[in-house]
Length: 316
Image (cartoon, rainbow, N blue to C red):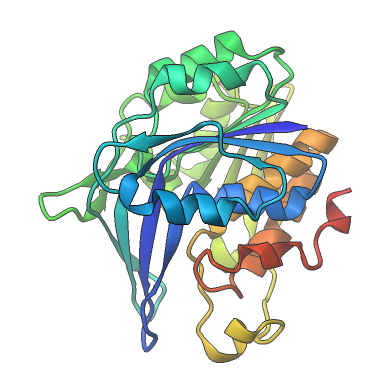
């Protein structure tokens, strides 16, 4: 199976209360590393994104140890890799600052890989990762209507102020974006911010199901996720319960605070892998929820290979 992954790379500085800062690759690195961990041998992950010269050597060294990950779609940016600084408060609310957001990924950088893909994951890491023309091209070029396009809205609901700090704001043309997707992911804050009308999740799901997507997934942190699916003229809502992650199980969890950074990215990657194999939305959401819960026990992105420890058999 070939999975195409599209989105911006960044380099994270994660500041948790009472802990030293954790640094490492972030953004699209999370789904790429997650797919490498849960898919294992026999599958190919092609990722398309840019990296600055400042991080290129380190990135390729990291990716060289991942089974099934192809670097053929990675290109070099003019300038530095975007640095994202994340500051968590005691209530897990966070302040995010992005210093050098890359330009949108060129359409011609992605086009050669679309026809070969069995599933396509687009993660709007910065919110400016692709243009609408890219999404339109993907739907025109993919080999079959059965190839799912998984779209994580992520930072589309975030603007950038003069101090590089991100802030919430609605997406005026969200309807035309989701029209060209099959499955849409967002978290609760993104769902609440996406529309000018401030639609409820249920109202948003009803409209979205008329536009094209077969499912809308809303991640809820430690409370799990909620799945909305179209069923004829109705929208069916399914709760995916949260998983309590006890301390222990790896050295980080015993000494450091749980780290929620990248859990949504991990969820999306695990979901699309399972869904591409099974076509089962609810089973895929349960699997993604388990993988994301496992990620909470890992600091930053440096230990994502540990996601495979107890999950490979569950993907079959």
